[in-house]
Image 1: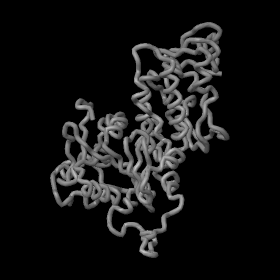
Image 2: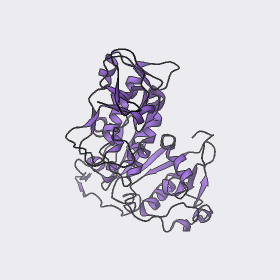
Image 3: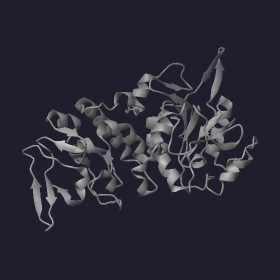
Image 4: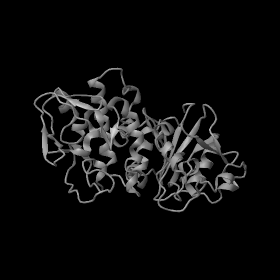
Length: 383
């Protein structure tokens, strides 16, 4: 975690039993789980004095959810001192602290040594099966001719992809940005990183399953570093990563409509240097291409208020992933150049009109190089 932050980065000390300000070069685990709409212990201005007071018996957390308690126990077993949990490390009644930390989700999860994932249930009381004794059913076993034989669940990897955790919008960037995932399901635990997927019932890396079911780590920050000049290949890679991320994110569920962009902030932060920032979820440097978004078989009748209709964020209840009429290869092969929030070129997919003072429309020509600023959308319309 960078030493200079715009907010106070807190972690839970699982041995002292209190929330503390993270020490310099702090090694910590992060928890990714589904809240599920239940009441749970949270860090607020009222609970702050209690939760920041050391208590090795963890009495301060006796009202915490089962998932939180299991995560604390897991860290203790591993010998890891610090654990980051959103409900306990972000002041939940301080909008400024919430905004600052939501904007830094890319740092919080990418800097964590590993992310502990609760993929076993629909609420924060589902727990982490297997952490505590007898917390999950044991597989049938038998000794035959001196061999210990055990029945393993078939296709248990689907317990991850089909879990409520994998369907929530907030958990997408948590999964995407983490270096390592320790995933707890009802059947077994998994360890996943860029190189392999390890399972309790397997003693070797299972790369086939990793590629087939867990190919979600599409953002590679080191390959998307911004250069000092316009780099079409860099933007091509970034826009392709943006398309893939949005396809996975768009069908996920949110409790609060106003969080649709907040839960995507980590992805935007990673891609922003190569795409020159975002406006209402659309990248500035290839804004016209991004405006061609659509969802196959989707009739847009469910609107999100307070979001523009021309953005994918302005609609909800997608039944199929978002796709683009103008894909990245088409954009860059047609000599379109995007720089500093303006688009230059010809053959654009969209005809733009400027709304005049008398409410008449004046077409912005696409036959010669022109300038278009996404910031002018309040008086610009598309065809």
